[in-house]
Length: 122
Image (tube, rainbow, N blue to C red):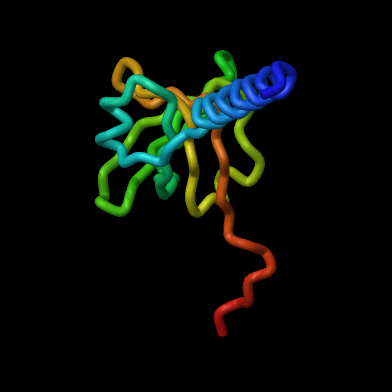
């Protein structure tokens, strides 16, 4: 075989392996609240927003809220940053982060609101 062909194949294999490892590193799995508390890596949790357990601290610009999952378990979440738009209207909230010191510290918060295009119940 030609040496150039072998080098080209080796370079392609290296790029494919690098791409696969980079893609796997960026995947963030959805987990249950109990798994999130045990995990050492960044994970995603989803739950219904408990509206009466939400507060925003203007001094620290931190949002504190509680999520409830389908098993009726609750998880306290803190998020350092501005309150997402339509936060109060959220049906579900996705928090991406780690569990630290008794709370889930979110790096990102995604709000899932009811669609304005859904038909009204008659």
